[in-house]
Image (cartoon, rainbow, N blue to C red; front, side):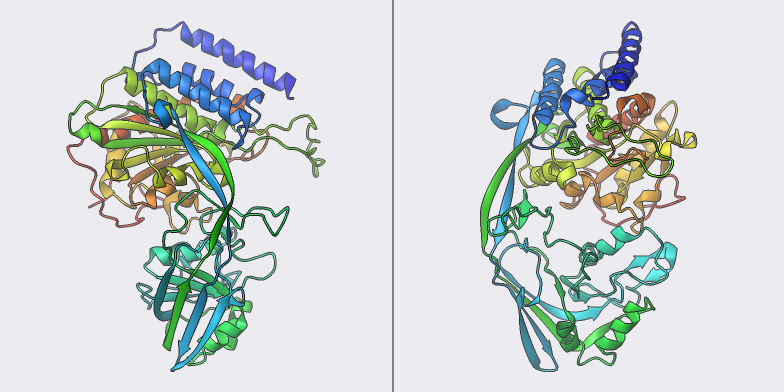
Amino acid sequence: MRARRTLASTLCAVTLVASLAAQPAPRGGIDSIQIGPLTEWLTFLSSDQLQGRATYTEGLGVAASYIAERLREWGVKPVGDNGTYFQTVRVLGVRNASKSTVTVEVNGQTRTFTDGEGITLPRNQGGTQTVAGDVVFAGYGLQIPTAKLDDYDGIDPKGKVLVWMGAQGPSTLPGGSGRLLSARGRQALEKGAIAVVSPTPPPGGGRGGRGRGGDQTAATNPETAPHFTAVQRYENPAAPSATAPDDFFEFLFSGSDVKYAELKDKAVKREPLPAFALKNAKITFNIDPAYTVVRTQFTRNVVGVVEGSDPKLKNTYVVYGAHYDHMGYREVAPRPGRGNQPPPDPNDRIYNGADDDGSGTVAIMAIARAFAQGPKPKRSLLFVWHAGEENGLLGSRYYVEFPVVPLESLVAQLNMDMVGRNRDDKREESNIVYVVGSDRISTELHNINEEANASLPKPLTMNYEMNDPAEPQSIYTRSDHYSYASKGIPIVFYFTGLHADYHQVSDTVDKILFDKIRRVAQLAYETGRRVANLDRAPERDNKGPRVGKGSKGKIGR
């Protein structure tokens, strides 16, 4: 496939590994995390031989076996199915013949709307339940301090059904904020709303999809194709989320001083919208799904444990995670180059995924070896290489529903995804690591991470820009740590930024900065070691995001 380039890069990597191997390497501990092994492992895992490590493919199976064999060599304990290093992930395709309804009461008058007829609920709508509450209108439903947008100013969404409108947001919305628009429902629920309703999006825009926490499946046969893909316990109750046409909202706002037609006109013009509680208005969701599993697929997480040294604390865990899957290969020839771009190589079809997330994969391999062959902290270290992240966090969502050790025994999760390049390949980014989520659930964990970095011989510059809840790429929700955070487990996400090769066939091993992987892995090792030696779990004060662009150092508790 990329014979000339791949051979050249492989020969360079082999030469580098050989020269480094000649040097005595420390056995275990932080100093054993070195460039040579990282290069060896990633050169194989991102090679054409593995065909892009797509979920459900032989290539991903080869990667899983490769990781497992290294764990066996290092003495990491298997904790998967039947004494193996593998946890089977069951991915279900589900259809829903929904019988759910939504009833609106305004000034004593009621109307009931049936799912699919006057109201649209997600196909994955959780278990049977009734949810009812008063209604608040939150304008565009956005809170972006850097853009001076706060549609929650003056209203309290806690315990309420929250409504917003405006598919495009206001005219003052910063460019590239599409992910913030699609995240409005999730953010409303995080603020305490019990349900959310928004207008039906225009064709080709808006929220898109009807799945809750699952990916839409292309229907080859609409009568039998799954409505959604699930790995979680999809019959657990979930906060309702719905979209509705004008008729629904005209009735809902019929008792308000400001009518729906006026609000819709302002939203179309992208003018400022008010926020207010609706008078004498109540919405009741009667969730009544009828699920049928029509397809089952299997993939695997790779799991191993290094047991701690304390007789009691070894039953609690610091978790290290990365995803080892990627996007496979292009089945059709690439399009011609645009403008001055050279024409793409028609034989270059494999998405090697060296940075995404081969870099994180080998980083936690190095950490696992360092703990297995070095001093043992009090707590145990759990290592999970997640499958199916590129398909919607499948492996991590499955893991937190079906953990191999009790979920309550996990004191923190440290996740690495794309830690092998500089953001936009800028040289001035060489010392920067983007830290996301460290302060949201546990202030103490954030401060431990800061202390760990300061203790390193050459500390990294920890940039918190992407921890801002208004960060337009919504990085906090886009990798496996989010599955753990959604269960209340404190997390730290290490990330070194996007670049032009993100999700391209050009994400290859010859572009990897192995010293950067080494340094990020050493930071994560030291943070995990410190947490694993605490006499108690890091305090979960749940104060939410406080550090952002320009933030530095520890924060007050």
